[in-house]
Length: 371
Image (cartoon, rainbow, N blue to C red; front, side, top):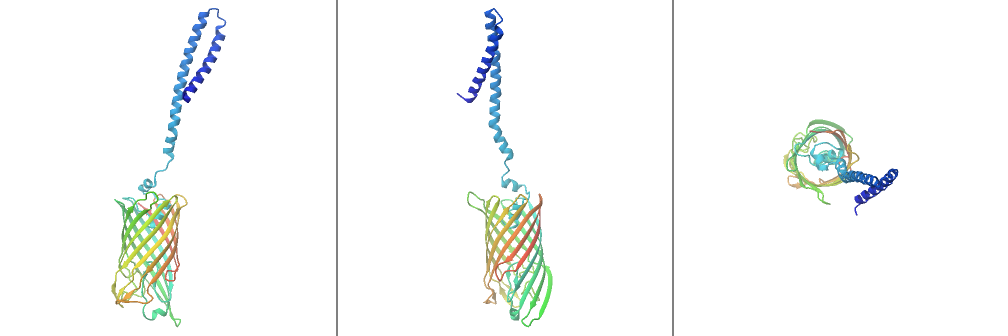
């Protein structure tokens, strides 16, 4: 017997017994047995109607209770991340991942970044472009000098989400640079210059969508044009850019483990040889690896940590390897991203050099606007 029928039977029994006693009590004054019997039957019919009404109410209440949890669950369950991303609305974690190459913008959504970076680097015998991290050969007496370089780079970066999991990227930098040279005989000279840096154009593609324990895979192709004056350009005293065209291909694996995401990147850069004032210079190719994570502390705030290592092979001058021109650049990067509105965010990052060839440190502030 079901719980509903037990409840119905119990209610009927209680009402019937109470009603019968009441009916008998009311029937006692009457001396006619037929009147008493008719009164009891009428009372039983009224009780049956009451039981049927209560049974219908119980059925309705039971059905409503069985449906309520599902309805409440649907109302309280947040939309999947893919749906929230498709709206283009910023969160701290999304902004951090897009900026660090771990997420693509939805189709039709665009971002514009305005950033300022201050970089400080020093070396004894090799001049390093610390911001673009490309090898620059120092020749002649300069090898005995201590060189201190400072860059302030203002840049605009645009991204737009395209159909079929593509994203187009463009970065245009403008650099203010100064170099201080201290020679072996304690002579000091300081020079400064400003101008456009190396313009970068890229395309990114989502190669694989995460399933189970497998991560997302993103591929990226980038072209860096030699629009900035480099160390070896005629009359160039120091670098505003690398001075060489280069092509970079990379693959990034991203695994989301709410409320964080882990990123690992493997990249290879091919730098094209070019004729310079000192001869034909062929900078070495570079292999870079990085491992990091972005942690969403709240919908508005995310923290990012990463370690990056870059290995650059020897530079060749007129086909001959230049001794000591290979580089190892290691960096620790820390960052925080905070959303200002539903379409704007601010990102602050610190880079710390871990190897002798790497810049000493860098500071970056970025304003992100999504459209």
